[in-house]
Amino acid sequence: MEVVELAELFLAEIVERRDFGVATELVFRVPPTFRPSPGQFVHLRCGDGGRILRRPYTVFSYGKETASVLVREAGSGSAWLRERRAGDLLDVLGPLGRGFETEDKTDSVMIAGGAGIAPFPLLSRVIRERGGGTVILWGMEYGEEFGDLPDLLAVETELRVATRDGSRGCEGTVLDLAREEGLTEDVAIYACGPRAMLLALVDSLDEAGRSSLQVSMEERMACGLGACRGCAVPEAGGSGYLTACRDGPVFRGEELDWERMRKSI
Ligand code: FES
Image (cartoon, rainbow, N blue to C red; front, top):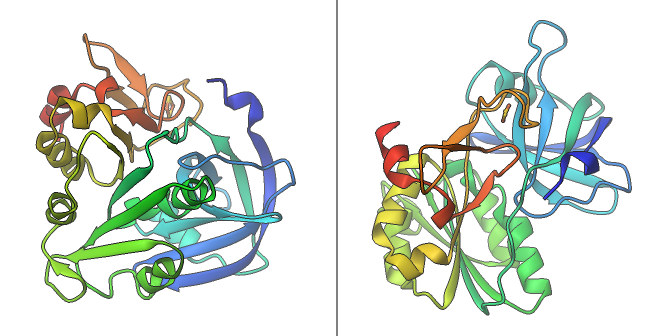
């Protein structure tokens, strides 16, 4: 799928910022041609001069004139982004990458770890608009980690939360919720989160379940365009690699070599 040709480079005015615990949603203006599919990302330039690398952020929402990203602090680039205010400009390249394919299956389960929730509001909206049923399972450390974002998401979609300390939803991990949900080959499974969570999920699935699985990989990226190979992930069936930025960030579970992935965490 050729996507780079569809990407645009533009300066976007931030029109709103909303803080949700450890994360901040930045809402910015987009051109009318900006039409991302769920799971695609934008590459944001971070900093006013010194830092030259961009940072990838999954499109969290978009409408007619705006789109947003959810920024969780994980270094100097994301810290700079979280300091942005309404009226500031963002240097945006996107949408980039391969997003989720929506399946014909009527039911779907989305499994998110922490900030891995980012692609799912948009994906669940698309699935609901097509008449499909979906539930989002979201694992986090503690109930207030993402402020009132779980309450807001629960207005539009079925959402179940697991927290390590039991302070919201079920006590445990998102995989405990997934087990309760009962993942079968009749259900489309979408997942995004830390690599260890994805590995545990893959381990819990049989072959049929893996073929129903699509994952969005949260890899570090530099160029974002498939040129530097800095975001390589092991490809199934050999010793090769795929790039998360151009071949992904969304992959079918069977496209990736999970055993080699396990060795690199
Ligand atoms: Fe350069 Fe993916 S970030 S190849």
